Every structure is written in structure tokens, then in C-alpha cells.
Image (cartoon, rainbow, N blue to C red; front, side, top):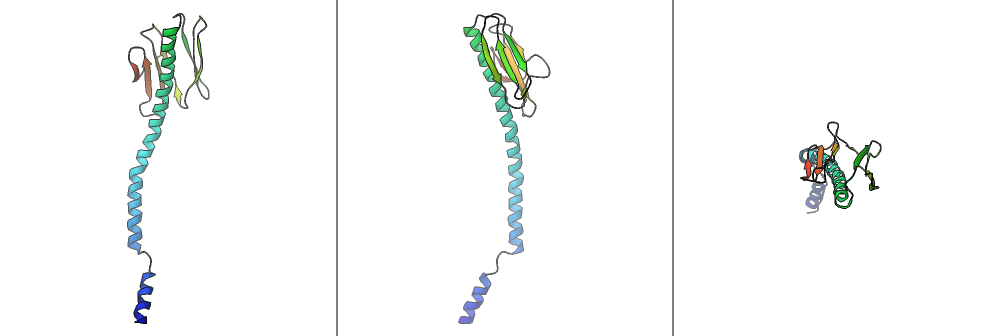
Length: 149
């Protein structure tokens, strides 16, 4: 009887087999292969969201100007830097101050960053080269959309 108890105790101290460890490692590898691409795309989506927020803020400032302002001589000035900034001003003294853009958000390389033709025809666009969609515009006619003005 004592010998059977002793042998059963010895058998319980064996630990994991090599096959069991390999199966666990393969399962962890499969889960990592699925999860890593999902996490990498989240970074690009976050950059797109930051650019959308920036262009939306500028668009709302322009809409406020056209609702409250005098409608004369409006300019949108882009200044590169860390972080880049946008200033909206007119000759009648209206100024939005300085709007700081998110990291990576710039004015588009092609085309105008702002087209201020009329209270109903203005459009402003920004780009982020690291995003998945990259380009966004905000206009009086269409609101927030992807693309350039």
C-alpha cells in the first residue's frame, strides 16, 4: 500500500511534456499573428481621426466667421513648425487666434489648403501622410469629407 502511494506521488511531479509546451507556443504564435496587424491599423486610424478633428475645428471657425463676421478679406495662414499652426484672420479685426494642428497633420502638397470664395462656397483641407485615408476636407456645402478642396 505504501509503495503504491509513493509511486503515485512520484508520477505527479513530472511537469509538462515537450509536446504540450509546443502546442501552447503554436497557439500563442497564431494569436499574435492575428492581433499584430489589427493593432498596427489602429495607429493609422488614430492619425486620421486627429486630422479630421483639426480640419473640423478650422471649418467650424470659418463657419462662425461667416455667421458672425463682416465677410471682408478673410485669410487662412498655415505655418509649419512643431506643431504646425493655422491662423484665420480678416481686415475687420476678427481673428481665431492660433489653431495648433496634431502631429503629422499638414496642408496638402497639391492644391490650396483653403478656398474662401464665399460664405457658402468655402472649403479647407488638411492631410496626414501617416494615416490610412490621408486627406480630409471641410466645406460649407458638404461638411466633413475625405479628399482635397
